[in-house]
Image (cartoon, rainbow, N blue to C red; front, side, top):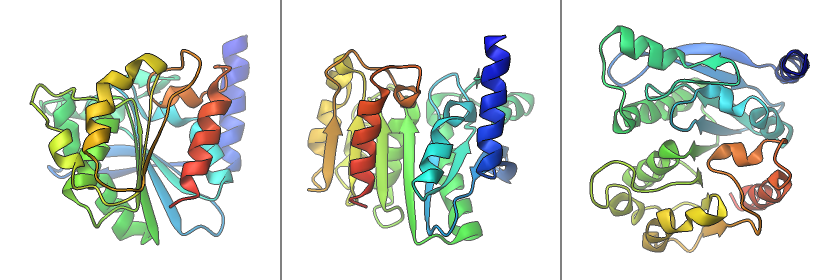
Length: 240
């Protein structure tokens, strides 16, 4: 019964904020799936990428809160993923059907394609990229490799997850825009080197006094310390 009630609440929430599911091509032509949440009178767009083994369902309760703050949002299924919150990753399923690789690094082209799609389709004044776990590292790489494309980055639990020395750090040194990094309390060691390499004076991080949680799920209401993460996120977004 609890799961039914939760599903109803989530359905009503996304309906209020005009959520719709869309498809668009990745860099290699793979069909990607994403949920778009529209905010009223906004010229800012946040693109949301999920953590390992998951889907765009990671943002079912997060995205509506961001739209309430005045941001259009797009929660993307990357080809490296699975399912969460009863939402199956359709991009991952399509990639497997087509015999495409679905390792973490293979999803970088999905991030590139998602940013290109938002730029061409919505022409927002500002674009912010937001990642969780492995994708939080990839959005840092994207911002470093494309220093004049996005206006801000939020990275939830990044690290050098890709089996290549300094794969993320070597790109992060070129980031010019505001950057926010956070994680569970014991995960700072995974990203401190990346953070230190960022030369921009517009960087900041947040570590909870509590144990905290890995990835964007740290913002889910079911975790008592989620409000502390939210406060840090809101303060950072004001700087962009």
